Length: 171
Image (cartoon, rainbow, N blue to C red):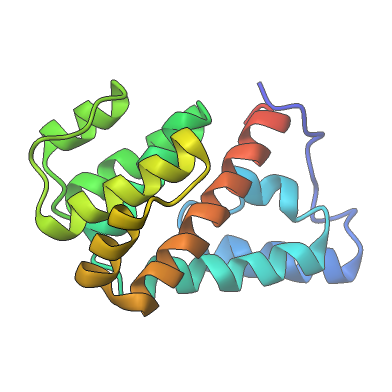
């Protein structure tokens, strides 16, 4: 059960209501999950909505790489709400069911393509040891480019923030 008090658009200040309604109209599933927390700070919510739109739809990352990284982060943080939101997206992106199951169990998936394997190694190093080993970095740059690695790094950070909100607000 969420720690957040219920919101009513009828009692919100105008700025908050506008942001709330924009998120409700444009965010998959409406104002749920971490956005239910972030909308309490309208400027924060508006800026994060733009960032999630970019990270979800406009990066150079293949969908399978993006969703693999998301699942790894939210699993590490035990952010079950975020896992449930992304498990189906991972499968839709082409990530094999065996890979999703392996991440859920904390194992390295065997059924990964080269780009996914490179991303896995980079993300795993960051989550497990808080470092990017040289070989993992070079492989990620080889398969994703520096632009892709920069976007992957932003994606990791964003989903750490998502996970923190899920854990703090008991979403």
